[in-house]
Structure formats: C-alpha cells, structure tokens
Image 1 (tube, rainbow, N blue to C red):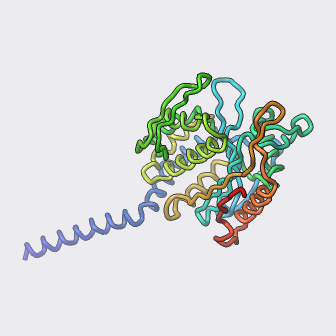
Image 2: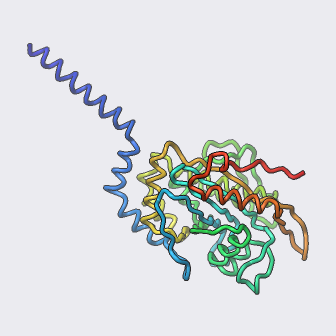
Image 3: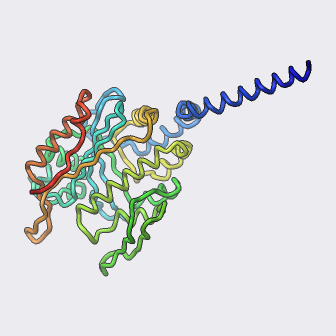
Length: 329
C-alpha cells in the first residue's frame, strides 16, 4: 500500500515537473516579460533617460503603441571631437501590430536642398547633419521625400564596438575577405565566412569605403538589421540595462523611455523577430562642381512617397507593403 502511495506521489511530482517545463517553454516570452517588469524595467527606463533628447520647438507626438510611426535613423561616424556627418540616413516606418519595419536608405551623396542652410543651398544630404544636426537632417529628409518624420534616433558607430562585444558579436553576411587597400584610408582586413564578428570587425565593416556609395549604404543597413535581430533574441533580455549603459551618449532619440519600453514589449510578444523590408532611393551618380553626387530619380521619389504612405496606413493590405524590385531601363 505504501509502495503504491509512494509511486503515485512520484507520478504526481513528475507530472508537475513536465507541466512546469512545458509551460515554461510555451510561455517563455510571457515569463521573460514578467521578469523584465519585476526586475529590469525601472533600471532600463533610468538608463534610457540619458539618451532622451527632444528637439526644441518640435511638438511631442501622442499615439497608441500599436499605431504605425516613422523615424529617421542617423548613423554617424564621429571620432573624438570632430564634426560628424550622417554617413547613414534611413527613413523607417514601424508597424508594431504587424511586427514589420520598412527601411528606406538615402545615399549620403544624394544631391538635394539642405533646408535651413544658406537659404536652401543644394549639396550632399549628409551635410545637413554637419551644419544643423538632427533638426536640419529631419527638415531636409521631409522636404526630399514629402513625408513627415515622427521621431529620430542617432547612433554613433564608433561607440558600438563595446555594444557588439557585450552581445557576443554579430552575424554579418561577409562571404569574401574585405581589405582596405587605399593608402589614404585606415588599414584593416575582415575575414569572410566567419560565424560571428567582433565589435571592431563590425566597425570596419561599416567604415569600408573602397567600392560604391550604394554598397556602403547597403552595408550600414545590413549592420543595423543584424544589430536589431541580435538584440531581440530571447537570451539577450537580461543584458538590456548593461547594453544601454554601454551605448551611453552614442545613442540619442526623442522617443520617451516609457514609450520605447512599451513598444519593445509589444513587438517582443510577436512571433519571431520583426520582418524587415528594405528599399533604397534610386538615382544616378554624376560628377559636377568638382565633386561626386547622387541624383535621385524623380519617378523613384514619387514611388517612395507612395510606399511610405502605404506603410503609414494601418489598414494597408500586405501587397501594398512590399517594395518593388527596381531596375533601370
């Protein structure tokens, strides 16, 4: 009789263990969020306060966390105390409810009016950041694309080395060795086909400039996508406060910390990492006034405006969100 009771207890204990393990697997995201709410949220919000930099005169946007919004992503390669230029300019649209992100790359040599600089002089778009910081960059991009920028975020690539290393490296699609050979450039070699790349290698990857501006812009977008994918992996949640602390002033945004946390939690509960759609503003390179410029095609600007409009529409159909495959006839 005692043996039967003992066996029954063991079966009950085993069943409880199985339920805990299965439940922990099935609801691991909910458990992770619970842990975040209990132990990390206050620390994360406090860390993000250091990155919060609203733009003077720009009214704060109020919306539900599930509504689509746009953000201008600026990747700045600024070393020491030099004046930085926005080597990367990406107009993004985030659709939290759909777990989708659109990244529209604007080549740094794009020839356009720099709004607010010398009466609207035309030159390379990356000069906007050098002459007027985030505000001038936003005004210039809004004028070029005819689309509103709800928020901005700047990342200084120089400060990302330690962040990448703290995440255990980043995955990059490098199939052949990348070598900087120009005597006027920084010397480095990145080995191809490695499973993971260090922070220094990732920095070399975004700085490599011995091919086309279009390829460099593409590498910047690939790196940012790789960082996002790495950051949303389940085993990285406990590292969030440390990662934000490492980034420090190398990351700034006008999104309030509480909104960013709610947004991240909303998207984290979706199935898998965000689905990223990429597009690049197309044009033609030309030499004029002693420099090299990228002239965007008017027809492609119109298409990009419509694409952004579709992504900002919460009721848009999936077919309206897929960027086209662009070809020049």
